[in-house]
Length: 370
Image 1 (tube, rainbow, N blue to C red):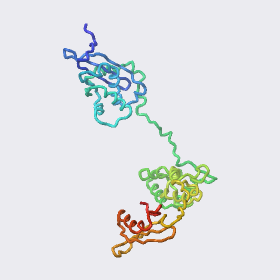
Image 2 (tube, rainbow, N blue to C red; image 1 turned 30 degrees about the vertical axis):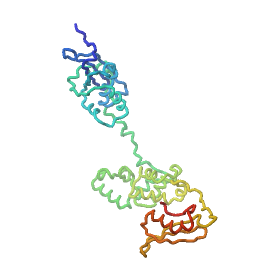
Image 3 (cartoon, one colour; image 1 turned 90 degrees about the horizontal axis):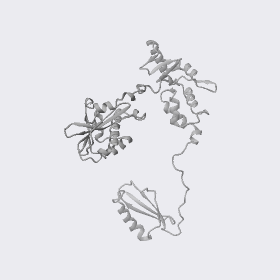
Image 4 (cartoon, rainbow, N blue to C red; image 1 turned 30 degrees about the horizontal axis):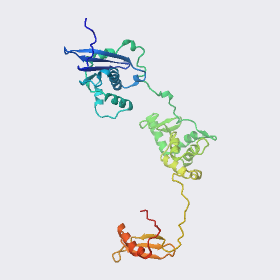
């Protein structure tokens, strides 16, 4: 009887067939013999680890290819004839073009660069050998669908804080809101619409009534009362528990439970009006350095000051004046010029009116940033 496995001959054409399931992978290395028939040389069948079982199916299929090439690297790396890799997963051809890869796929692509191969999609009906090696029934025991279509956070775990009783120093803020809702025109209008429709929810679940309170998007609506709204902000800002938070943290805290029009603006105005908050506000700019006075000149025209007077009426072809002042004697030169004069032109003016008479100064003080 002829042997089941053929002896490998590296001068002949090779082919890798790889397949993967949810829990295992399998592969076959076949060789084209002299009678033009493909015969298996070696095979592999491995159970996936718990970590690998969590991979997406396209990554599992690629992992099967990687495992086969690792096992048969001594046969396939440097082979003279380009070999083919068969897979029944069409999406693996996606990796044969330029894509943004994750770290695991990047390691794979570095490993695959050691081989000369072509990835070919083959229908699953022609992948019988590799498919059978990846479907071992003894490895399927204990592998189920227990994690499929599961909800990570259950609804009963979610806690709605909108109706929590907020009592600070004997003040029940929610009771005050219940009493004042009858004097707010907008709330009265919404309540009337709810009574007419005989429902508890209105306007696509935007408004609803619960326990005597009007909720807008699951947040307690605070009626139009400046004192009450200021007290709600005070409860989230001035109490010892809250600790005088900043503007955006305050907005997040207040709007977590309450809502009214322009709540963000009112929170900002409240914080800006608090003297304690403004006095303890952190400065974002670096601290200013020490004030350094100018060096006292010991003789004229060593330290000078320069500035421009611009936007003047045109006179004799000039619309600006360059002012150069000696810091010691306060002697001044008023030099006519044009506002759009270039740097080279200014240098010529300075040379002809100042430098030729007094020489080059040690320093020039100017308010021009350039």
